Image (cartoon, rainbow, N blue to C red; front, side, top):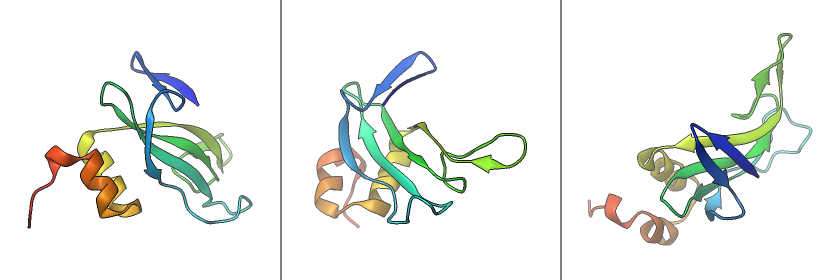
Length: 103
């Protein structure tokens, strides 16, 4: 998927996929989401995917909400939080080395 937001190109074909961020719900479920967390070559983070009428990709059509697809731009700290929720420690340590510290 390729989208332009605020004059910047977000392209899943040229970005690196960090991890999946979707869920295992059926495509007929309003909460269904098939998405992934990506980082661009210049260090921009985004989620790309599609989802049902109760997903983060939903939008109002005036009568209610419908499922859609799109790109959600994230800050580095938002991307780290998303990765912490969906991925393992090894991947997070590789993708966010300067943002981690020992507890």
